[in-house]
Image 1 (spheres, rainbow, N blue to C red):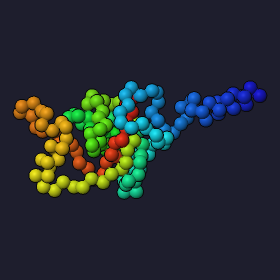
Image 2: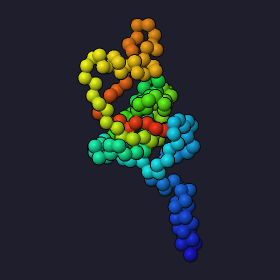
Image 3: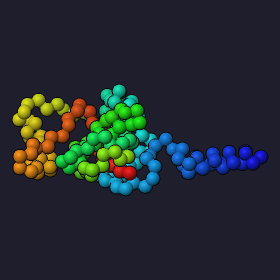
Image 4: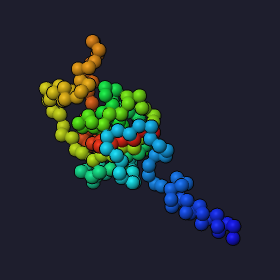
Length: 163
């Protein structure tokens, strides 16, 4: 009887999220939130997103993982990795959601829309692209201007929580 009572109690706690049985959300209270609130409940598998990106285009997704790359200019992009090492790039296309440039190795939840970026073809376009960014031109004398990565697909960041 005691085991049955304990089992039912544990099940109730698990369903209520008290034992961390939820499939999504990084544990704990975020140390920093930026942009829009995160409203999606379940994170997409980064491995699946990376393998089948076209199937996710124009869909809102939640990425959860570890920051393994971050924009050192302004924090406008973050590369997020899952436990298996699969990665995907999230980028604030309008520079409205900026993460700290020293957040490598921290847990993050990023919500946004999977977006196709048009390829940059000519060097003139690359130079124009650099000047779109707030941080372009804000470099010390002798340093190269910062250039953001431009993969074919990104998660256009709407909001993020850093843990």
